[in-house]
Length: 329
Image 1 (cartoon, rainbow, N blue to C red):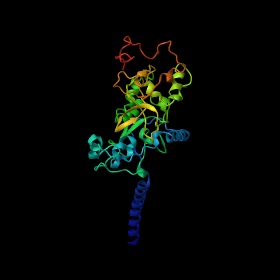
Image 2 (image 1 turned 60 degrees about the horizontal axis):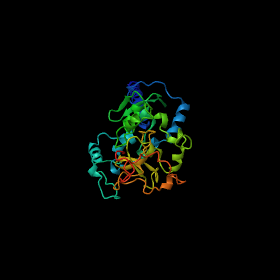
Image 3 (image 1 turned 90 degrees about the vertical axis):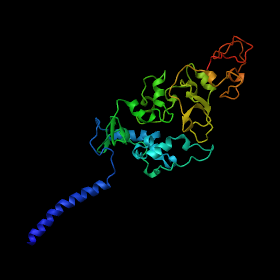
Image 4 (image 1 turned 90 degrees about the horizontal axis):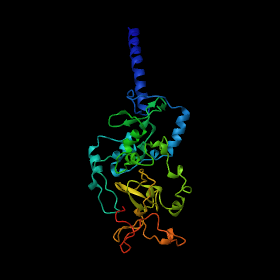
């Protein structure tokens, strides 16, 4: 009888102990996004060398440091800035975040807290990690691209890089970067990674273009504090001199747009057809000029006056109020 009892206990332990061990292991393991089999093709898996290189590139990118306190509703900001932290069930907070009236305040006053939001701490913030754009495979990732949809809890297939980037950079709060890029006359058909690299490394116009050579070298030298996109913008964005001390574009003349506030942001709709009157020579006395004072000597150092300025039209009426055609934007 005792032998039968101990035999029964041994059978129970043989079942319970492995099960408990498996549950404990699952609870202690870091969560992975693709708990279910991926719904997109996985493709080739990145090697250790490729992972090291990708990590180094990613750490230099803006994707590696996206934390936004969000004034109590940063889970709504996380939809793009840290998709794993986005809580799609916080509908009330999302509506408050999209309501302009919830943030209207006395200029300079702190932005009010959004009562319905739940703040995600910086320690719990994930940023934009590899598994947002690549399906995890064991200890590596697929080299093909897909987008992690937090609301659906699965990966979405994408046809190309532009479609992937558009999940966050298309029409979001005024940052219509993908649309601008598609409209750009001089970079038509280019994918984001052609300038920004595969993992979002910082990019500058001067990475490809030397401002000290070529036909525009003289004008570039005359505009040392002007961001390239201020002159080359094709989208008719407002141009201003950034006065925000902690801005990366502080004291630069640069394009800006509305994104919660008026924000310096380089245009991606670019052209080589420069229109100087956007900053110089206002059309009428009531028009404001981006550049407060521009003397003739600023452009005509030797006092050249024998030839008409090639950048501005002759005024057929010398007695008019302006030397620029009223039809010029």
